[in-house]
Image (cartoon, rainbow, N blue to C red; front, side, top):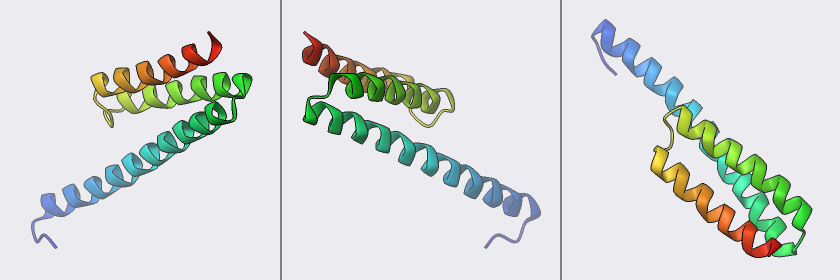
Length: 88
């Protein structure tokens, strides 16, 4: 553990942001898994709803700096391609 006061404060804020980032990433992974499950079942309506929620979570993660904006765009593009193949 750090002895310097500012280092102790920094360690505390790092831990808070680590937990926040972990929560957002876990939530994001769960929403993408729900999308994959809906696609696997062939349920178009559920897949579209899951796609909408997953893209929202991806955008939120990119806004908070948890995902890079290009990573977020790539993930959304992949999901959109899957949903477009399903509805076509």
